[in-house]
Structures are given as C-alpha cells and as structure tokens.
Length: 498
Image 1 (cartoon, rainbow, N blue to C red):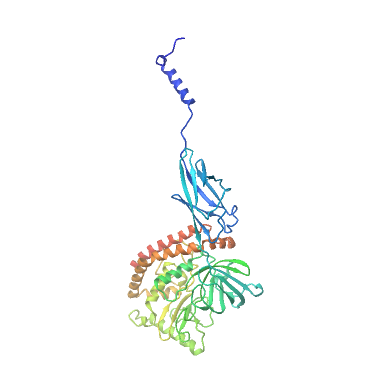
Image 2 (tube, rainbow, N blue to C red):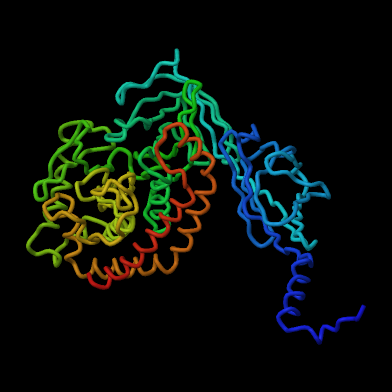
C-alpha cells in the first residue's frame, strides 16, 4: 500500500486531522487557587460559646479570633470555606463543621491547591478580659418598683481584675426620669457602709445606668472621658459591669458615682457650699425659678437647714444672674460670680456630643463653695445626645447648630448663649477647643476602641436579653467614631465663625 504523505493532502483534511488530535489530548493544566474565604466558630457546634458565634478575621496569612476570657478551647470545631483541593492541620485533613482542634497550641491551616502548591494560615487567639459582674439579691427577692423607697439587699461583686471583690449589704431603688419608664431600669445603690469599688474613692452612694436607648452602651462613658480630658473638675468615672438581679441576668450596665457633695465627689464645703441642678423636672424638695431667665433651679446638696439658708442660696444665684443679664454686660463684674473657664469647657463637652439637654435645661449641674464662684459641672446624662434628640436616632447629622444650642425660645438657650456675647469668652472657647482637638482627640478615640473591646461580649448578652441595640456592634462603634470625626471638623469651622 502506498504511503500517504501529509504534505500531499488537501489543507482542509489536514486541519481536520489536527483538530481531532487536539480533542483527544487530555487537559493537564491544574488549578493553583488556594485561599481561605470564611472562618468562624458556630455556637451550635461549640456549646462553650454561650454568647453566640465568633467570626474570624482573615488577613495576611492570619485568622484572628477574639474569644471570651477563660473559654475552653481544647476542642473547638471551625466552620470554613476555601478555594483549593483540601485543607490540612498537622497533616490531618479538615472537614468544615466536623473536625475539632486544640487551640491551646498553635493551629496552622495548610490549603493545598490542585497543582500541589500550598498556602498557610495561622489561627491567633486573643481574649476579651471580662468586665466586673455585680450580683444583687433583694430581701425575699422583692421587685424594685419605686424610685423613692429603698429595698434592702445583699450585694456581691466579682471585680475580674478591675479592683477587689466585694460583698456586703446595700439598699437599692429605682432612679431616673424618662429612663425609669423604659424596660431596662436604672438603679441607685446605698451601701450599708462606705466602700472602695473598682479602685474608686470610698463612698456609700453609687448609680447603675442602664443605657437602654444607647446602641453602643458607651455614650455616657465617652462623654465622661471628654470631660476628664478637657479638665472639668469632678467628672465621673465609668465602670462597665454585668448585672444579675435576684438570680436573673439583667443586662450590661454602667456603674458610676452619685453626683453629690463629698470629699471624693464634688469636693467643696458640704455645709456652706452648694450643688445646684437646673432641670425642668423640678423634682427636688427645695426649688425656685430664677428672676431673669426663668431657670428651674433645684438645691441638690446639701440638706437645706432653714428658710434663711434657702433664701441665702436663692439670693446668691440671683445676684450672679442679675450681673449676667445686666445691660452693662460684659463690661461689668459678672465674672466675679462664675468661673468662665468651666463654662467654656462645659459648653465644649455638650457641643462635641451635641447634648441638647442643656437647652431645656435638664441635668445641668453647677456648684459654689463658700464665698467662691459658681463652677459648671459635673456633666451628666448623655443618652439623648450624639444626634438623638429630635431624630430619635443616634449619629444623624453632625452639623446641627452648635453655639446657638437650637431653640431660641428655650430657657437654656437664652441663658447659655448670653456667655457667648462676651468676646473674651468666645476667644477662650476657641483657644480651649483648639488645644483639646490638637492634644486630646487621639486619646479620646483610643479610649473608645479600648472601651468597646471590653464590653463587646457583655453587649451580646444584653442584646440577647433586651432585643434592643445592634447586632453589628463593631459597625456601630465605627459609626460613633465617624460621627465624632465629623463633629470635630464642624466645630473647627464653627469656632472660627463665632
């Protein structure tokens, strides 16, 4: 038979032969993809995760996981997805949602691609130290239903590294105005004897704030930090705690000092000094409306001893207010009656947090030592701040009116805007604000991150109980920081235009 040369075949037949050969040739190219896409510990597979799933953050060959303190990690089952042929740990193939590992030792995941190439991820575990836990049991487990009447109770505190543990007797009652009407209640404690709690000064009277409408559970704490950083005397401290009441978990709370006259609180003469509160709720025993601005003034401390004592308190305040309202203001002696630096710092705190309660006014404190000047503070009550009032949603626009405080017909507006008619006060405001922005902003934002890290497990439990808050806690904290960034920028602009 004659041999046929390929060169003698027609071109189209040759192409058919070559095409057929290509189809019969197997594809030997292997996929080199190798990547970990998702990684988490699901509570349904790991019973020790009583607070819910924990999702890992995958970045640059690491799986970063933040776990509750003292969690058993000797047998944790991971759920994951990936690109590649298989996943190994120590040479053992891993099955998502099935294979347990001991995370007390380093756990390195090796993803093998179809072409045999590999990529490694090391799981790194960080722990969230626990916040303190307060346990209160009322006598006969009686419900706390009154803001006026105390109940006796046993109290024990697991400080968890925030100080010393504590146990004793206490009295407890409700507190607050609008907050008392919310499902999660705030409380007032009066210990049987003075005690040091969480390394704070020894006292009897303490407050447990519920922060029910606060999606971050830290807006009061952040405001207190601003007050401390700007140098307002007697600013409260913030201790996040979990509270168990009569054997039932009650939520994530903030323990802080009661606003009162004492050597470790508002440290002025507790007999001849005075702590006043401006508040339209008008719920103290001794109260009066001021002559010029119609301010609702209440005597918070000390106990009023006589009619003459009360008249002297009123007379002192009216003398100051007369000077502020005088036609000769600001070229008169009004600064002899009030510490202007405290006014400026107070206004900056309320402006930065956009706390419109200064406008009503509500929960506005000022104090005066015997023969001294009035001084603004301590700051208090920031649940409705950060854009909430008027919108009923936190972190709305960061550009509402600043030094005008909002409503021109409100009592607080009329009173506090008067100070800003003095050019010296305006200049002091600019100087103190600029210094605060330059020197303290970074420390404030570091505090927000630190505090959020401490309470994130508590926040999960609180959300599970009260169904009020956010399922994206980290995202909400970022929203708070973004809002504050905008507020800083706006206050820079506003200070220049005042």
